[in-house]
Length: 455
Image (cartoon, rainbow, N blue to C red):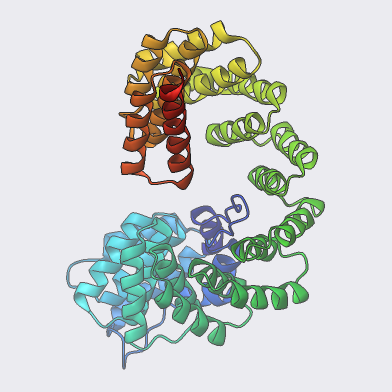
């Protein structure tokens, strides 16, 4: 079989998530004539810079290469039977390359390593080892091997593009950018090199520069969905949400927007106050055959509930139950119960909401939101002692401390326990000073003063 067939299996082109463009090397890179030529090269060897082979090894190599064209597995078995510890590193190289052609990546890497132990400056073995490690997902080893190949004299664009990908994936943005720029210079038709450079610019917050490059790329290739995703990302980074929406809607009209992208459009419309459009995009995402993740469903439900669309939000929660109920983790269950309780409370179904909140607190005694909501319910029921207990427990949770203290203080004011309310608000100011709390305390103190001077 051809090597390119396995390259597609090893490194498929991944779809972008949301509108953050995927930096993965595409099948166009792995199947390009430049890569195949660079990797496969020739089974012949350059004796001046590569390991020497004897006449008998030359004959063996010609025999095996001819056999591998139609009988690759048989050629591998035959070469394995002929190779030994004294064989030239060139023979190990040939066997490693055949292993790669046969999709046996781990043993291919081991055999390239064996060749390099025999002949450390074997450039092609070093470079090919880098590509094999890259296919295996061992990015650190791949980057090291590709960099060594370049130091040994490799100057092919595909090597720089692959090295750039390794650096980018490992968060080394400056090194990745330098590699990608060199890749573009040596391999100008490579979309992966330009895509990688765009990702470097986005990752380092250089949005105007990335936008200028993307506009140029889109002009040349208007159907390039990577560029549209990246352009939306750059525009949002520049706080140009309306323009980001246009970029994503363009992808949607092209039929290339994934489900997570529809959720992103819904979020952007929501941020702009366009709630009807927001809801329609969320619904479109939900109706897609591609399944949303649990966290995305929950986020959609939360946004709908926060904007007061309780019926729609609850419908999403029911769909979550149907889609994920049997696979809920305890944390997932807590999140859904909290949202359901919030909807029930907002729609006047207090007893059902309290039942759910108590379930949450039973499993998570320090779940601040549930404790806070239970405190509010007890206050509504005029059970001030129980409300105080819940507010005090909520105040022990860092994320809810300030809100619980303020709500507790408000309740104390409602029952004319002014000194206690001021103490609670002073605790708030010690944690998170706020002018509005100062004004609130002053109004309470004025109330206390006026009540004292009344006959």
